[in-house]
Image (cartoon, rainbow, N blue to C red; front, side, top):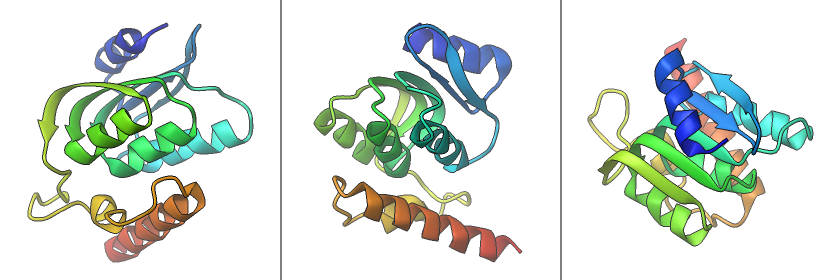
Length: 146
């Protein structure tokens, strides 16, 4: 497998996120936002998967920090933020994309996305803190939709 296989599968099956190891696709999701990455993280932490390649629709700071924690080596994304590209370079993750944007915006495209904003000054090497911020931000988003 490689990142192109993930991208092809994502497009063919109209998925939001596709992850593979060296031999096969090990995770797919049609959920929105950061939720697929959190689902993948759970499988990784349970020792059920070892991700290597990923294709995703949108890759921002939160998603790439989770991917780096899981040992991802290469990611393709339709849209990637500059902060995600910078983290990819620092964490030695090859990132390819269709569109590079200065930042991921909120769903209304009015301001910086909630995860990008929440993680702005985080120590990206402190994954416990990163994950805590991601989870709390997701809880706030879900509470606003009720």
